[in-house]
Image (cartoon, rainbow, N blue to C red; front, top):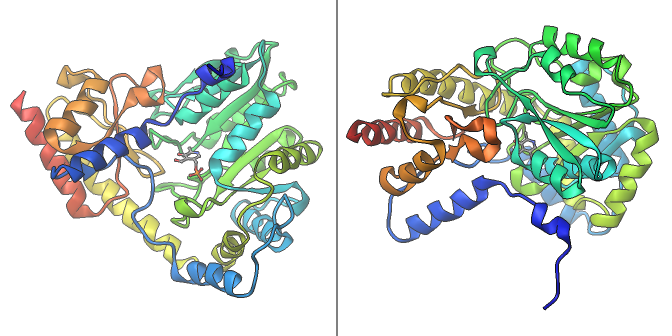
Length: 389
Ligand code: PLP
């Protein structure tokens, strides 16, 4: 019997895909399921972006591109970062990758090995911990606090750093909590990191344009981090392009060539037509993005108060992304059981907070990237399920 490498046993997964499969199976059996488990906009990719992808195929862009991505796209990324954050980033430091996840995997491959510690948000995107373990490194949980709107305390994060820490992962606005780290806390963290020059930072800002109050502070705006910051971003959420598989990272100049080498060893380059579509997204009208974010803002205004009306449920107002992360401890049902019973008995697909790390116990994640009638139906069903006791 062939034997897999030990590291395969360390690889986790993303529960959203498993719950989605179960929800689809129940639907095929004739059950009526309201699906709030998957984290993707319920909008179509804007038409001008689709057209640019179609045109690229018609124009014959069928071959490999440069491994780090076509230059006009990397230039468009630089211009977009300047537009959004006022930072000047050379296109040479930009790597186009197939989706946001690839950057985190590359960062973990670059820094993770046995004996090394990597700090990640908990509750946080599950692939962080999975990829850290896969690399052989030890994951160290950075707790996010409901009492702080699911932000962190800079002092608490700095206290987790040891001589073995190689990488610190940040994610704001966050999945699964919708939490946003205030600029004042980022300032304190960055100031403290001056005492730890051995620590690199990966900032996952994939929800950076989905903020409902205030403005997004990008870690790229701190020049003191420029030689050790990896920025993770992409098109999936902002432009409703999850299926196109298009993302990018910005690397310090010294690591950009290493990151490109990882790309050459894994996927060679990103689908050429998707890259042309990516240019249209960044350089085209902002109106479709603004319309989508306005719709999410309206849904957020509806669903958070509605969840707070349910017995045993309290929910803080998320500052960004499109997730509600209600505290369900008052229901007396643990998160995993509640996820499963809501799906099987209540007809609502949600995710247990524990799918995002141990500190997610007592919470559920609901994606509100769904229409208002769907959200109202979900809240009604959850209420009816909880009322049954
Ligand atoms: N980072 C966070 C915080 C996410 O929530 C997601 C997707 O849900 C990703 C990265 C990955 O995005 P992509 O689908 O582009 O790989």
